[in-house]
Each structure stands twice: as structure tokens, then as C-alpha cells.
Length: 406
Image (cartoon, rainbow, N blue to C red):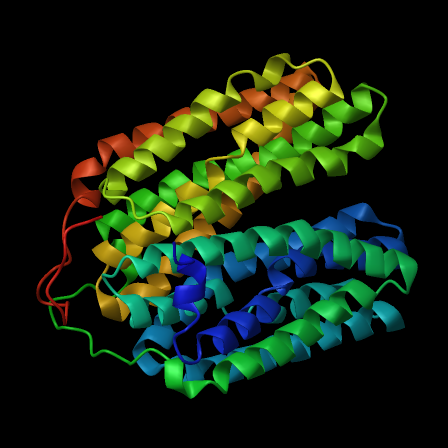
């Protein structure tokens, strides 16, 4: 049986832009926690570290879709070098301001400008879509990208903190910034796989967020992002209560590992079920497998329960991005994917906050009720929007004949 992952990388240029994209996306995980590690060590004030990191994350969440909209209209090679240069310079200023103990307002200003960092996962998925549009190989490519995202989030945060603690406070942000600069430069230099700029039809809406499928998928993934963050917060709280705080990293790693493995398996399959049904099924599994989590009483039980609850995370992301590819006009694709990525980030931020409140108020195990409620709301969102998700691209904006969902 042929290896589907080997097949997608036989395409000329695929290995190059995928590898560069992996390096360039490291700041997604490294930058926010790297800022916290840097400032908390240098200033000893966690409120300041958290506030600057949150400023960066929230500004990037708002700016990234607008940058991606420019990319759709002008092309990756025209927009990305400028926004990346602004972001790299701002990160450098943030490190210098920290090292030189400049006024606190300079930290916030640098964090805002650093948020000009483009959405690398969206640009990589746009290249895969350009190559495999409406072909089954696209599911495999999206599965690979979801696995790459998982690896970045697993390794990036630990790497940023480890470097800052082991070397010097700015080390995590420094490596993150170098990854952004080198990875993005290598990515943009590969012009042969860059998506073509498609002229927007006069009847097409100006922004991807006006598209009903983008609204539905983004809202659903806000809830899924909340589940992801809740698992991390609750795992830390429960392992601490059980007297094994060091086990938290193992539990969180197991959670991501379950998602990673199932996502790779899914990418190797050729499923015929419509994508909107696959999405509803995956979210249903997430909700169902979250039900035992508030009742676990030992670390081994917690690890097993968390592993099972994570198996459908990657399939959810894979089908969500597949729906965006099929339901959004081609000239809005990068922006559409970025809105979904933004939804995940917003959900993680909200989920961490709500789960933390639940843990403080009701106890460590009760944080997982946030996962159950969020899963139910995500499933309800997808079921109520199933007709929109089952639709076809508008013929005015599509340059190819639409194909039925696989």
C-alpha cells in the first residue's frame, strides 16, 4: 500500500516550503510563553509579563486576518517580507527594552508591533490547496499540517521556557525571533509554489469573515480551543492536588500525543463521508470522551482519560480546514484559514481563564466541566450550521467546477 504522505511530498517544492513553514511557525508557541519567561525573570513581576504577552497575543489575533487579507489580494511574496521585518524588529526592541530596563510602556509598544507576524500555517495550507485543490491528497496534506501544529505547540513552549531558564532570560524570545526570520525568508524565496493572486469578483464580499461557513467554523473552534486550554490548566491543578506536580507535563504531552497519532492516521485514509458530518462526528467524540474527566482520581487514570479525550482534536482541525478550503472563495482562502486559527487562539485564551476560575472556585477536577460545556456548544454550533457547511462555493468566485465534499 503506497504511503500517502510520501505521495504528497513527491510534488516539486513541497518538501522545501513545508520544512520552511515548520520553522517559521515556531513563534506561535514560543513567543507568548517566551515573553512571560523573559519578563518574569528580569522584572520579577508576573502581572507585567502576562499583560505584555496577552497584548502580543490579542493584537496578533486581530491583525493576522487583516494581514492574510492583504496576502490574498497582493500575494505572499509582496506582503510577508514587510510584515515579518516589522515583527522581527519589534521583537528585537522588546528584548533590548527588557535587557536595558526601559520604561514599561516600551514593552507594550514593542509587543503591539511584534504582532505584525503573519499567519504561517494559513500560508502553508494555501500552498497545499493550490497544489491539491479538490483532490483527496489535500486531506493528507492538511493532516500533516495539523500534526506539525501539534508538534510546534508541544515542543515550542517547553523550548522557550527551557532556553530562558538555562541560558539567559531573553534566550527563548531570541530563538523564536530567529526562527521567524530564517523560516519565513526560506518560505518566501520558494516562489514556484506560491499561490496565484486571484482577482476578487465584484459580487464577492470584502472579507472572509462575512462568509457564513467561516463564521460557523470559527465559532465552533473557539469552543474547541477552550477545550484544549482547559485540559492543560486542569492537568496542572489536578496533578498538584495529587502531590505529583511534575506529572503535569507528561499528562499534557499524552493529550497532544493522542491527537497527533489519530490525525496522522486520518490523513492516510480516503474517507467518503461529507466533511460537515465528519466535523460533527469528531466534535461529538470530543464531547463524549470529556465526560469521565471530572471523575478521575489518580495520575495514571488522568493520563489515560486525557489521551482518549484528545484523539479527536486533530480530526476536528483537519475537517475544519477542509471545509474552509471547499466553502470559501479561492481569493479569500488565506484570510479564511487565518480566521479559524484566530478562533482557536481566542478559545485557548478564554478557556484558560474560565478553567482557572472554575479550578479556584470549585476545585481542580471541576475545571473539566468547562471542556464538557464547550464541547456541547461546539457540537450545537456545527449542527445548527450544517446546511451552510454543506453548501458549494459561489460560482461567481470559483475558477474551477466545484466538487462534492468527500
